Image (cartoon, rainbow, N blue to C red; front, side, top):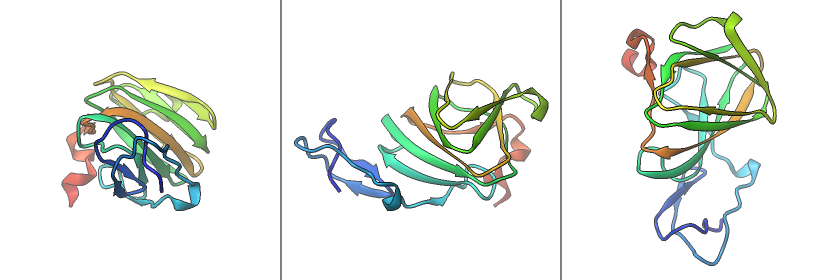
Length: 153
């Protein structure tokens, strides 16, 4: 796998650290993506780091796969996020209370940009994959701390 032409730091590609090579671009093929459980979301969500490291300062790209009939409770992020729906339907609503009736259905190809600390929630009716880009350090804070799946472990 070739390294991303950005800087001389380390980037994570499909879960593996890769040293930078200023003479080559990065190519990540879909069948090479290593999906892993995403413990900051309710059980069933998978993620794959495409580039960067969400826990550190700097740009990162990750893909998230949500199963059918899935919900992410109202939450915020410390930094702005952007995403593109790759497949399925990403239903997103704004506010601090989950309400399926107040969501917008984003189909494959749709773009979403959410500001920092903006409460929102998500649900799916089919398997949905989206690619998120943001500048780390990234995180998630649930509006209702009792809904945070990390606290039940």
